[in-house]
Image (cartoon, rainbow, N blue to C red; front, side, top):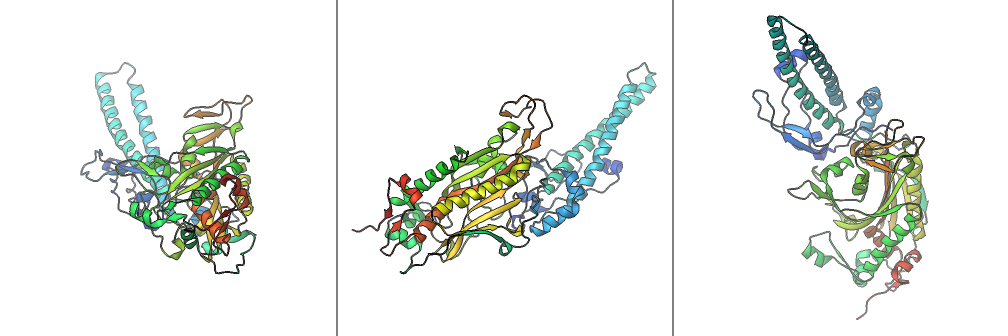
Length: 511
């Protein structure tokens, strides 16, 4: 499935530097007005940008926004499917400006043709000068060649600027959408599966905050003094519970052929952006490191997605399946209310993430495997949950289709999201530069980093998928609230007991 670009939320709008208009020479040659300035919302969040102030045009003063990376966008496909792309932008509530993309693309094609024409004329003049010529004729050719060279330099600079603007604007277009995805907001999402039922209690239930206090499992007050709000200390059996959840998840998922990873937790901001996140947007969820090009990760999806960046993989190596453990860091900007209390929404947490690189025709199958693994994991813990096929308005820019799992949390008196599984098709791989080469008669090596593989058919972009195996804090919420007993103790789910030294019950501390 063809991928277009990145979704830009309206909240991401900030001012950016203006582009210089085409030079007078360019306008006279192309006979077209300068393209519209890039919208500030797209420039702010679509991609990493830098200011190029070395423009030679007269009266220059503003910088030129230059992307630090470029996605492999199929503009011909977008143009050939204009109505479908426009409808997709609308149903996903994207602010992408498709009309501007087409305007810039038409101007790009026109200018590119003019550049090619001048190059041909320059080459023709150079060929004429190879023979024996009258001095006056040679001098005329020299002057003509000089004028063509100067004009070509100006046009080529304008083509670079126009290409940059086209990239920035086109990268705001979200991925295409699976035809079965329901259209609308989150409330339009469709139930895929429901497991278990809400437990009946014959005593007054407590939320995880009260249970954690009585069991001496958390310390939010001390963490607030040390780090700020939405941080916490885990204590006593809560530490064992986190370790158990992580080790159990990695063990179970590894049995499915996934390679375990522990990832870097600081990555380049360009990698964050290529995966579809917005480190520079207003209300961003990403922590950026001041005076650097690095960010803290909000999910292991980012460093795992980048592990094969700028690579050509062998078809025989696919699928590549990883299960990655990391700490995650999120600003949780804009989050407020009772539903965010305690461990439910925090700035730092541990998570086990699944990630797959595969052939395009197999991504649907692997998406089904990922959501099935999630459902099997949570069912084995004895949780009551429902799986939802999320509607278009709830899809992030990279997702072609996304399933969410929401588990019942009796203390919070609501269902809360504990995981999601997304098929991103080639949205991320077109940005990360991850391709595969169809298998030749003799299998090539597993991976050729930044190089060419064995001779065979043309390379293709892989598809990427990601899914949460365990988001630790929310599963701790589920376990404490669902398995609490009348005496204040907590029954440890049976699959976790071997990872907790055989512990079956978390009991209140009595002094």
